[in-house]
Length: 420
Ligand code: SF4
Image 1: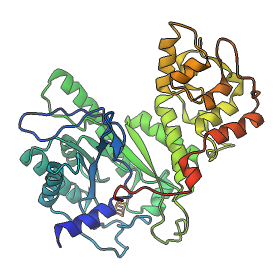
Image 2 (image 1 turned 90 degrees about the vertical axis):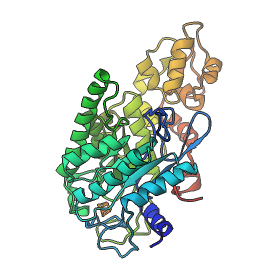
Image 3 (image 1 turned 180 degrees about the horizontal axis):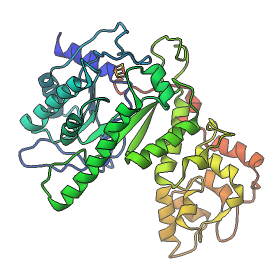
Image 4 (image 1 turned 45 degrees about the vertical axis):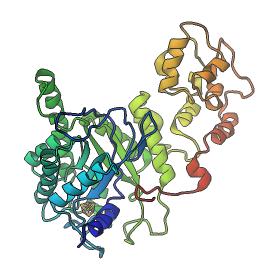
């Protein structure tokens, strides 16, 4: 099979993998090495740096042959699809060729399980070794560790990649058993624990020895499929929180289930991917990571799912009106962060600017506060916008109108990293 045909198959087979980001790592240029990464390149697979550049990773599978039978996956062994596999050298040459031609700035590598997890990881490691050691490639690499692979191979992969991830796949052990019969919770969590431990030890080693080899300097992430099984948003968010707490993950990626196969255990193929739900989970995830919220504050047993019409922070504010209005000239940073329309950057700007002069609505607008949301929940110099009383029934329509996001306006449409 021609290399281009393999690329077409293996890039297409990788498109359901959401866990890629080049953020959080700085790999400066080194003598004799090609490429570098920058920690300013925040975002995901296609993201924009501060100077407007689009950051692109080559996202492929080593192979889409797979001995496992995950019910939702196009690559499962029982599905009749065209199959292909790169040799390690083919993949390394393809990556460095694309890099030299400026098509990509890094590699995102995953794989179906060919033979066994160890065999698959060995192929991936061989490809990355050729890339790093023979072609002196110093750009960003995100590699997926295969659940069930030996710890020594996870270590070797971490020494070659910037970021590792192990997909948790399903939000509960019961769903995992039903939909991924070849995977177990312990086979997924064990490498996560190992990566966490090795990242910590590597940090200590680097503090002592500047030239110590780095182990996954951009940390680890995971991916969870949303909508293929029946778990609530509350369940998913609590699980994400415990993964952040226990394994120090950089990101939990949510992937709205795209029905590509007909199966009695799965939503029918006519079901639209729950993209709005995925969007709300990402918003809530942001609140956990940067705004000091805990999962149990955002959802409870009586209301276990997010309101599709309103972002999670506005929902929380509406349910806690006794904590508002907040005086922006005196409130502490933590409380400012809880005001809808005030983000991390604008909260910090408020703290700096109010030292010089007390702030009014005009100043807040200049500082980047989204007043169409914030104005209902704040006072400036003791005054509140009195057009709307602080009662949920009055606030809800205004907040809902302010929250109209592109997903709601244009219907569902999944972006493809491979669409031109
Ligand atoms: S292990 Fe499961 S999810 Fe991964 S490629 Fe194989 S069938 Fe698909």
